[in-house]
Amino acid sequence: MSHSSAQHQSPYPAVPAYEPHPSFDAVPDRARWHYKPRRAFWRSKVVRASAVAVVLALCGLVILALVRQQTGTEGFLVGLGLAVLPVPLLMAAFRWLDRVDPGPWRNLLFSFAWGACAAALVAIVANTFATRWIATATADPASADTLGATVVAPVVEESAKAAAVLLVFLFRRRDFTGIVDGVVIAGFTATGFAFTENILYLGNAFGEDQQFGTSGFASVTAATFFVRIVMSPFAHPLFTVLTGIGFGFAAITAHRHRIRRVALPSLGLTLAMGTHALWNGSAALGPWGFYAVYGAFMVPAFGLLTWLAIWSRQRELRTISGELPAYAAAGWLTPAEPLALSSMRARSLARGYAARCFGPAAARAVSEYESFATSLAFLRHRARRGAVGADFTAREQELLHHLWQRKEVAAPALTYAARITGRVWTPPPHLDYAGYNPYRY
Image (cartoon, rainbow, N blue to C red):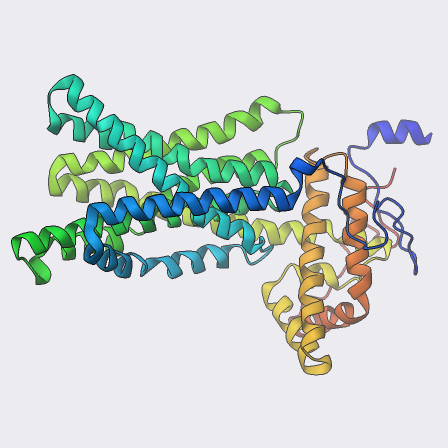
């Protein structure tokens, strides 16, 4: 078979053959061994980061002034102290979910800041304007509040939060590789939004208690804290995670399916708006209606999405064990490494072994090795689905170079961890893995 014929039939490139001193000739910047495609000045990371930081800082100052104006200084401080309580727990939960291939903290901090500042500012301004307009048009303030909460607020708030997910999807595409990344980015964004919103609600509740002299468990502050912090801290993350899942499916969809790549995030956003509207509308049904929606819909939906997120994480581990044997067969990895890298326990043991034997620097090298190997497996998996760009070869060689640099320390540590955990690699009986390469032309 000719090379051109094989190339036409193969949907993805071959794994490069391993050499003791590979050249990595597809990486443009060999001096620094880090692939950075040339960009125009206005597209540089420094310019973008600075612009985003300035915009978020301005939004933060404005939202701070608006919330403080509505709640008063004392109410703002009380609301801030109570609203911050669930934030570390939610952030830790989403970060745990992202342990297989941790995204950079800059993306997560951006998402949280966007939700807390930009999205919250858009929501406050747009919701207030829409509610006043409806009240003026209908001459019925009570109806305006209900329509604003059930129709306007879900559309405005979920669209504002979805903007953060869209921005990471477009401008940090390398870090946005699948469903788990969509869930984590959406979760951090919604956590930030809920944080600011809770400050406003709890601060207003405290002001009402101060006005009427109520305190203790019968106070409005206690009731608001119980509903928003104890019972439903996951409400906003639950809504926005649906949008994140839509973007996650789009990330693993082949480039040729353009309609699907647009339709899936749109469907996720629509579902987020619908669940948000149902949740807000339950308040109009009275206390029993609220608890009915909470028990019959919110809790099961939360459980289902939690299962989906954990299943997606396990799927990531299976992707590692399924894609990396090709690189082991080509000589880049030892035979035991793919299965060790697909076990969180084995990864931890490898880092601990390196730290005990060679010190913290070696443990850090093993951790970096695990991260690069994971990225390599996901890159190969996306290549299978036709979801990689023109820079695939350069990106693959960049990752292989990072592995090659750390191989001397990381390979023995991972082999040791594989042996300790009993994850001994054996070739499947129906395949001969001696020189096996599933991507060979």
